[in-house]
Length: 353
Ligand code: NDP
Ligand code: ZN
Image (cartoon, rainbow, N blue to C red; front, side, top):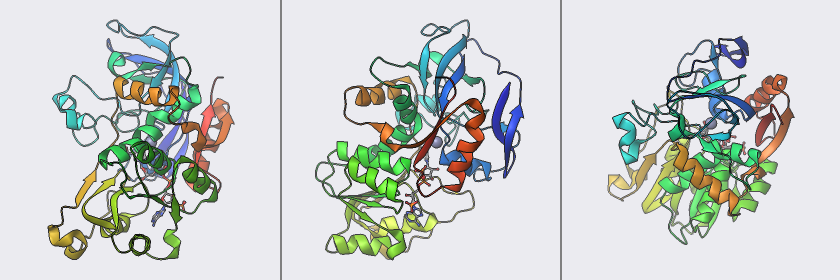
């Protein structure tokens, strides 16, 4: 079969591989829609270490093509939603409620691209189909489901990890698709003032639509100083980091008030180092929590997020800025994600309408 991926660090293109084999509990999916992610471009540049001959992509919806002999819930022909995180639920690591994304170690449950070929192919493999797949429900468009599998799941996770309480002043750093979904999640959790950081005009419009009350730019001076000024020196109750560099984490801490929470969902580089001066962290005694987390996966997670869309609480399709049609368009969509065109938020590719 044919897939799009990385031959080696920095070199992407078409890859020929055997169709994946289906274990007794697993499924083989034929994707109908895929979306490249900034995590794919990050991996392709070696940001998570060297990989060779790896099919990229971890965001897909599709049709079940084959199921293993012990799969009970799904059959070939079912239209399914595939979470980007597919834990091995039989593994003790995944059975600990706080660590389902880390079944065999740090983000071990991120299997598509993380430890096996991804979804940008004619077929891809999903482990433990009964626990990881969800049927596309009536009333949810497939492109909305596609935006749930990672973008909404990760962005909303940023708001969950930040533990936002009603009326909190929240800062979301980054208004790429993940940050935009974090804004939507923060608004649903009852944020009061909601300050977003970013510059791309198309994303700014969507940020306001999802509930951002103010937008600031990291190009107009240090963002921690800007937030302090906007809040009369107080700082924010909650800060979600969904963009920027290693330095951004320090800025996030500096803009957080005592007893506040910094919730990081940004993907730092393996060579990054963080420097947190003690004063910025309240001399280590200001009860400022620094949390970093990876989005949860599995069927129940997807079903809950699908309900948020089905019952009209959030429309994640507002983040789709570019739609490509045809299997051969995957390289173009990936390149757009890689170069980050100014009007880009999130591209998607319809493989089979
Ligand atoms: P994007 O690159 O689309 O967006 C990044 C945002 O950060 C943009 O709004 C950009 O601003 C802003 N930004 C850039 N530099 C700075 C800076 N110095 N200070 C403040 N803001 C800055 O990324 P995505 O939304 O696709 O993804 C965000 C992060 O989330 C990535 O690191 C990605 O790998 C990660 N991720 C994590 C997952 C998880 O489970 N933890 C899953 C999926 C993604 P501008 O508007 O100017 O472009
Ligand atoms: Zn992703």
